[in-house]
Image (cartoon, rainbow, N blue to C red; front, side):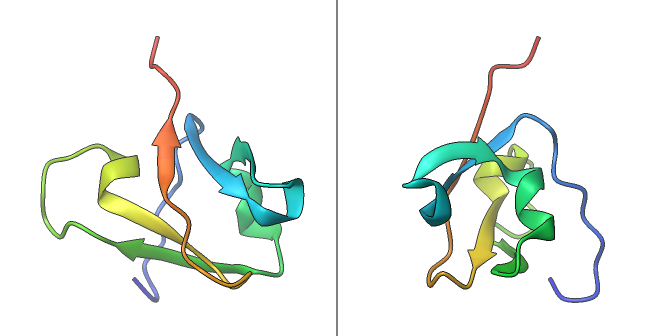
Amino acid sequence: MEGDEIEIPPNVLVRCPLKKFDQRRARACEGCEHFGGLTEMVQGATVRFHQRFALQCRHPIDRELSALAED
């Protein structure tokens, strides 16, 4: 999704290889040198963010997303 600005919701998590694959908020990836943007896995579908997108991590593979329960 090059060129598109998509805001990562604050409740979306990702397992980070730099943090021993512990979960961290995916928004933190935006400042990482390994962040490569988002990949749309399900185009045009009405699914939740973490089901629709994968995070492009150049360390070295895409990361599956999950979400915290919404209040």
